[in-house]
Length: 138
Image (cartoon, rainbow, N blue to C red; front, side):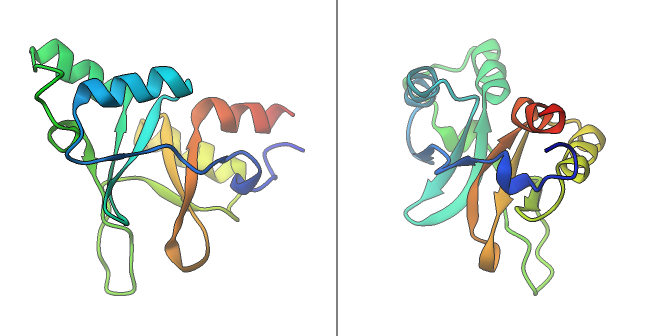
């Protein structure tokens, strides 16, 4: 075990998901109930973004009303990388990449959460910095 393990070994399966039209309040409640620091944001069955604790904190500090502000307004939007060359502001990594590579990417990008993709680019979960650090020293 360690940094040569794959990201797949550290990923939180079945990443908690929320709808893009749900409120910031609903996102906070979901994170608290599930002890989660990030949620995958969906429009029906389509991934549209990621919302993190930091996104929610920024929203609250701006004075946004949690009951009426939507997740769409505060999330980081995503486009999964495709053969057509779509770009992605959400950092993502294939589940078969090494933990060491994931940690390096997270450090360079200055992020604490990463979408993890599997076969066909389908999101398989979220890896957090804590998850990956734990796997690195296991």
